[in-house]
Each structure stands twice: as structure tokens, then as C-alpha cells.
Image (cartoon, rainbow, N blue to C red; front, side):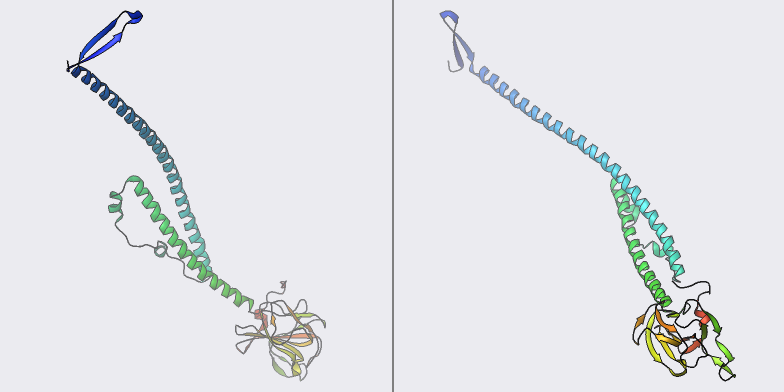
Length: 305
């Protein structure tokens, strides 16, 4: 009896009790089979769910990969455009450097090469996307080094140009007054007082008394007083070997030690000192050597404003 299970069930309408005897091994086998089916079903459902999830993730990754490839392609195009702009900038910079009397950047220097592994060996060990990223990285690295090279070159160029601007600003180059005309030139002439041939150290400009006299370059006033036969005189040192003098003034509008700019009014035309009439005597000296002032004056039909 221990090898059987007995099941009793009551029929409807008090029709009696029915009993069923089933072998114990058969019940246990059936229960085990049912349990195995349940476990297998749960496992398959779990697996299927995981597979579906992985499939969904894979689809998302493929979409993301496709989008990244598009963005990578766009980025590569932008890098190539940037390289083109750098080449254009190099051409313009070299022209500016030539104008500043500087050596242009050579092609060898522009490549700003550095050492590293042999490219083909590296590319053989990388996947396609890795090769693309590696090339972009190399291009960006070169662009960064080229931009630093350009920055250093521009710094040198700007320093030269600023120095040239400073030199130009401190070099006499304009007429010392507006209006008037030349009444006596630089060099040998007959002295109006003695009638003898003498050397005239500057240029005389005839103008009405009171006409403004202007500085012909940036500088510092080193003299602003009466100086014997020169009458009221202003002397300006321009700091680059040049000095200018303005004599026979009727009035001085600056003082010693004052900084003046090109075109700034420093005095008024007069008739003081050894003079035969209202005029401005203008001298230019370079390293204590007198120069012809007309060589440092722009054309007569051009005026400083």
C-alpha cells in the first residue's frame, strides 16, 4: 500500500465515494515533470526577455553608431576646412612679414613635424574608426602647433610694426605750419644783413605773424626760450636721433620737458631776434648733423590734419 496514493472524491447528489489508487512513483514522476516544465518555461521566458532587451539595446547602439559616424564625417570636413583657413592665413602672414622685411615662414617650418611610430604600423593595429580618430587627432595636434607658430610670428611681426610706427611718429615728416611759402632754402645763400655768402641752417617759411607753428613729429621739448639772434625758439628732441628747431616766434605755447605730438601747436610765427620780417625758421638735425628740412616734409599740396 505504501507504493500507492489513494485519492477519494465524493460524487454529486450523495451518489457515494469513489477512490482512485495511483502508483507513488507515477505521481512523483508527473510532479517532477510538471516542475521541470515550469522551470524550463520560466528560464525560456527570462532568456527571451533578455534577448529582446539585448536586441533593443543593439538597435539603439546601431542608431547611435550611425549618428556618431555622421557627426564624425562632419567633424572631419570641418577639420579640413580649418586646415585650409590656416593655409590662407599663412599666405597673408607671409606677405605681411615680407612687407616688414622679415623672413617668411618656410614650408618645412610650417609642417612643425614631431617624432612618433611609423603610421602604417599603427593603422594596421587599429580598427577603421580608430584610424579615423587617429588621423583627426594628428591633424588637430598639428593645427595647434601651427597656431602657436603663427601666434609667435604675429607677436614678432607686431613688435616690428609697432617699432616702425614709433619711429615714423618720431620722424619729422610734415610742414611746420599750415599755409605760408618758402622764402629761403637750406644751404648757401646771401646773408640779408651782411650781403655775404653764408650757410643757411634751415628753411624759412614766410607767413603772417601769429600763424600757428606745429611740431613735425612726436617728441619732448628741450628748449622753449629766447636764444639770441634766433629770437624766441622752441627745440624738440624726438628720441630717435632727430631734433627740430622753430625760431623767430612771436609766442611760445609749450615749456621745457613737455611731451608733444605731431601736429600739436607749439608757438606762433613772429619777427623776433635777427629777422627782417615775420617768418618761421625751421631746422632739422639728425645725430647733431644738420639736414635739409625739405627732405622731411610731405608734398606742398598735402597738409597734416
